[in-house]
Image (cartoon, rainbow, N blue to C red):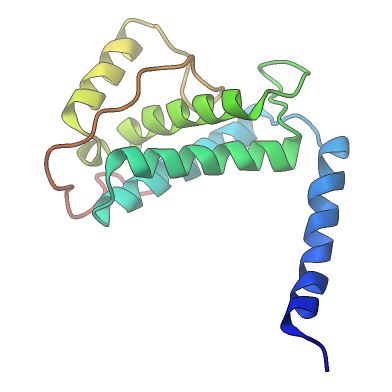
Length: 157
């Protein structure tokens, strides 16, 4: 009789092989892929906020998800940024910033007012590129919201 641990190990072996081999053959993330990843991250923020999750936590999870996808699928390389893999910390920071920027566009009612105001001011001044195409420069940590989130996202996915 096999132990559950052995079965689990056999199930995870293909995943482990993919994760260790995939980055060597991965193509850099394209603009279209970055837009998709950012949109998914923003939708995760919106859904999390509508479910009552703290904004900082929602953005952190969305940013980590985007960073891990770029790391796993593209070896940490973003075509628009260059040909060298970005360190995971840079991917995380850029992905968090992208999730913040995109959530303001996708579900502004789920974003704390002070964060929304800062993002809108930066975008109006031309200080950042379009949020979906590349990680933005590091920004200050988003503030924790004071009130309860709205019941539903403002924009449809």
